[in-house]
Structures are given as structure tokens and as C-alpha cells.
Image (tube, rainbow, N blue to C red):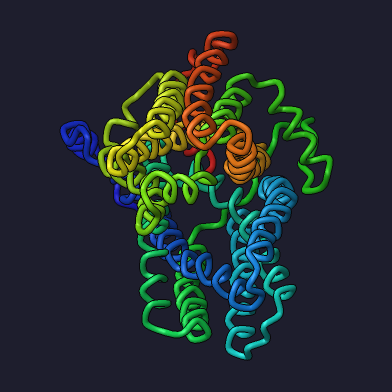
Length: 439
């Protein structure tokens, strides 16, 4: 693999740029290909994420069926996220990523074929969504655990920032582009076009993954147990996790942030009751992602922070406080602004959580812990939706929204005060493990 060297001059230039997003990881050829492939494919996936619920409602005329899509996607994610993480520590991660991406790609082709043939079967839609989710759940730990093997340790935060910023931008632009398709075509034709776009753009991921170098498991110490992709491997990863307060707390503050301060389920009600509906709900759904994109583009400072644990806690507290004040806002634009601030804090939190995991965990367990990370990231916001909606039935939307945000900020501070391991954490500065992985 040929890479452009990351020279001292490049380091000095990056320092002078200050707030501009750090693009030095793009000098690593393998990472640059992954970044392009993942960004393009995630943008394409947004077409499917819009088309599936639109098609489901057109078939059933039932929001309950649309809601079942969330269950169909979540259950495989919880199951195969853990298994995929264990597998990523046993087999070549490049091969695992190719195989799991193929599974997800074939499910997307299945969506396209059933739309072209007008099958109109809601159970088939649920099945295809479940298969697609399983493919994503297996590929995600492998994809994330590859990053510390192909970029220097010091650039892992910058690499994660680039990835999060790109996917978040896709999360904003993709649905808007899908909306244009459904505005120009009938629903039947629109879903066909949307699925076709996703199928075509997904192929970029195969190109990027195929061009990666082999990434086999690192040879373990003599006498250490051989890793397993079965239940024993998953248990080994969980056993390691519960003995590491830094990792446990990084997961814990994220769960607190998402369960108590994710107001997404309240957007339709608040948009209607407080702002008269219309375009307000669209702005509320887009605001957090817009803030994350802006935060990513001004993130040049992230890789220079040495006290990443403290930075993570501050970001989670900032998320909670911004969400809390947003719930009290009487102006749509003030609410959107505060949600955007929360989105920027969420990006910082996500980057540091991912970076702490990737650099703190040994490579032999990195895939399994990435599997746990996938489950936490997927499950937290969905539990937050349940918490927000249920609480609102008893206290009202404002109390559920604002109260949840302030509670999350308080709980994050309490965790950091009672269990100080996270705030004491500093990232390793040596790239010896990365160099060893390339030998």
C-alpha cells in the first residue's frame, strides 16, 4: 500500500489551520478510499431509508406497519452487532466487510426487484429490512475496527471526525434528494428510482473495501486464549469491558445522553402545537444533523485535545443543556439554533467515544467492543424515543423534552464526579501498535 507521508510540515500546517476540519487522514490512501466509499454509500442509503416507509404506508395505509420497520431493523442490529464484533476479531476484517456488505447490497437489490414487480407485500418489506440491518450490524464493527489499523494513532480522532461529518451530511442531503424524487414521480415510480440509486451508489463501497490491504487478526501472546466468533468470544469481550471503567463510562454517558435527552419523538407534536405544523417539523428533524455538519467542518481542534475524557463529558453536558433550553424555546428559529448547538456537541461526543474505544481497547478485542458500541449507538436513541413519548403523555411535551435534557446533563456530571476514571483519561501517543499491524 502506497501512502503519502504525513510530514512535520503537514503537522505544522494543521496546527495553523486551527478550527478548520483536519484532513490529514486523507493522505492515507486506504483511509481515503474507505472515506469515499462510506460517504457515497451512506448518501445512497438515505434514499432507501425514505423509500421503505413511504412504500410501506402506500401498501398498508397504516402507521403501525411503518412503526414495525423500526423493530425489524433494531432486532437484527442488536443480535448481529455483537456477533459481527466477535467475528471481526477472528477473521480478516477486509473479507468480513466485503461479505457483510454483499449481504446488505443483495437486500437492497431485493427491495428494488419487489418494487419493480409491484409485489406489495408488507411482510416481504419487513424481511428485507431485517436482512439489510443484519448486514449493516456485521459490517459496522469491522469497518470501525479497521481505522486504527490503517491510520496513525494520533490521527484517529481526525479520521473519525471526517467520517462522522460525511455521514451526517449524507443524513441531511440524502432525504432532501429523496424528497425531490417523490415530488417528481408517483410513489410507485419514486420508490423504484430511490432503490435503484442506492443499489448503484452502494457499489462504491465494494470498490473501496476491495482495494484495502488484508487486515488479519494480530497474532496474540503465547498462552492467551484463541479468539472465538461464537458466544465465548462475545462473553470475553463483555468480560474485558466490565473491568475497564474508562470504556464503561464512555458508554454510560452516551446512554444517559440518548435515553434522557433525545427529543426526536416529540418533534411532530411540538411542531404542530407550538408552531402550527407545516415546514416546522422538517426543520426540527434536520436541525441536529445540520449542527453536526457545522461542528465537523470547524473541528480542527479536536485532535489536539489531550484530555479526551474531560472533553467527552463536557460535550455530553453541552448536549443536555442545549436540548433542555431548546425544549423551552418559543421561537422556531431559536429552537432550531439550540438543536444545532446540541448536534455540534453530539458530534464531538461521538468522535471522542469512538476514538477512546479504538485506541484504548487492544486490537484482539477491538471488533467485539465495536459490536457493543454499535448496539449502544443503535439502541440508545430508540430507547430515548420511547422515554420521551411515554413521559410526554404524563407531563406534557415541554416537561418531557426540557426536563430530559437537564437531567441528562446532571447525570453526566454526576457520573464523572463519582467515577473519575473517564475524566483522567488521556489517549496513547505511540504509533507502535499501528506500525506492528502493518509489518
